[in-house]
Length: 369
Image (cartoon, rainbow, N blue to C red; front, top):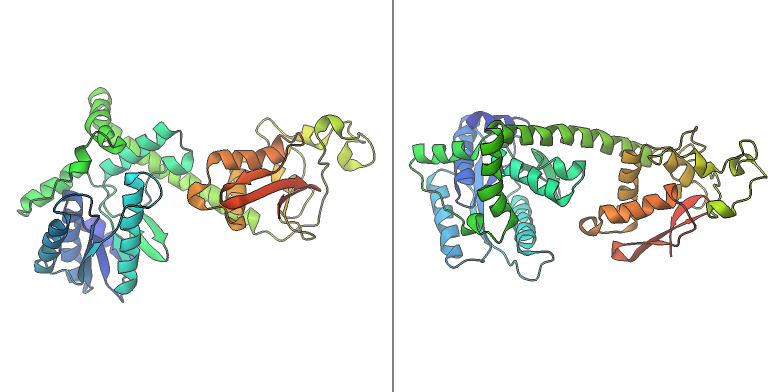
């Protein structure tokens, strides 16, 4: 565990403390003790933040107890932060998570921390993958929790993704620490609690202990693939603007079959006939870049020339650029945008979250004013 923490801290700037997010549970307690040990030997400052969600009786006292222990363990700075969960969007779990991460990012900025360390373990990763699979998530969801991500400019690190929950409990027992047992972790009204209590034990019983490692490994493999596809999409979206190439926007049955290269006069085919079954343009793209230089928007021909996995990411990123809130933007919205490229039948504008509307006109995808 200390080795995992040392590796996580190795690439961070020397100036400024690292903060451990600690609920008082076994995972975060073990992480806090390991971080205090490693940081002191690296000559760097390590502190702790505990968040009081105010959802249970005695939560303020629990937060104060964790903060008091942290001070005695040599962690500094130490802060107990109360948050308000009610009134936030989403279900109770999502609202609490949003409040918690906002509090952690704010604390990191107050203390000029170089990173916040989170205590998620291999077991948490396996649960996350199973929950994503049950939701029908794509590669991004099945990638699970990343070892590092930035939140409002604050690096969030998860050093324990290769450490088991049993190992964190053993570490606490060896150190004489009594972890707090969050009742939400055993409340069957929460999907994650049901997966933890019923689904994972059943999988282990049926398939062996290796199933947890395999789920975590699947997440790592998909994360690498997703990062590569994201990079390709970003490169496509930031490529130099291309000239405007017009693709007929009438439904296929109404498009004239003569008059130029794009209308099929030489091939006897409508350009959309050149789309392969997965929606990719099978010929050479007729536009130097996705973004059209004259009049803006994205070129339909250039979009059709992209592999489907890259095109969907381009459309997702472009929708965010137009103002669609990332949290509300779902695969259904991206599929509707993709249909303007690959299943064009003269349909009207596609409505996106945030009041954004996109239409196809003049061979381009354009926001509707």
